[in-house]
Image (cartoon, rainbow, N blue to C red; front, side):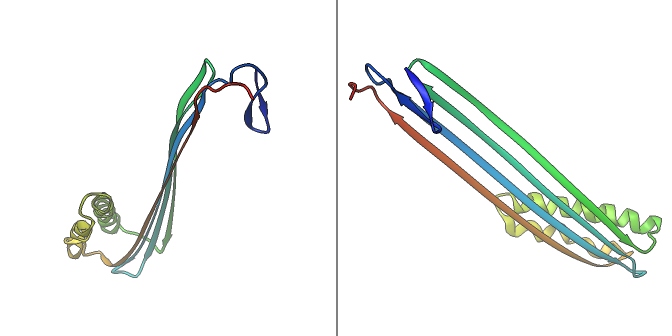
Length: 154
């Protein structure tokens, strides 16, 4: 018989069955901050935080087996405006956000040094005087494998 004992499998008689646990998990967290000052002195601050988790597991004990996978994602955004934005500033902010998105995709690509190229047209956004961008990305992963074959009872 197999029964739980403080989170483990315990064997209580006969030939010990084979058991095994295989599991893997990964997490990615990204933080992006953008502070923009317009030519008229208005200030806009945008913050984005995202987190995604994924994993899978496969457990076998004797003739029983359980397996599955999970995935979750979270996105938070915050916008703060100090001043009053006109239509041109709003349009230029939209263009700048597309540049930021393009740069973020390049940072995650095979050649991250190309990310700055996404901002080559910033000077065309005449209603925006300055922009400061902060970006960070953290990736974590883990894997575990534990198994045993059949053996005679102790």
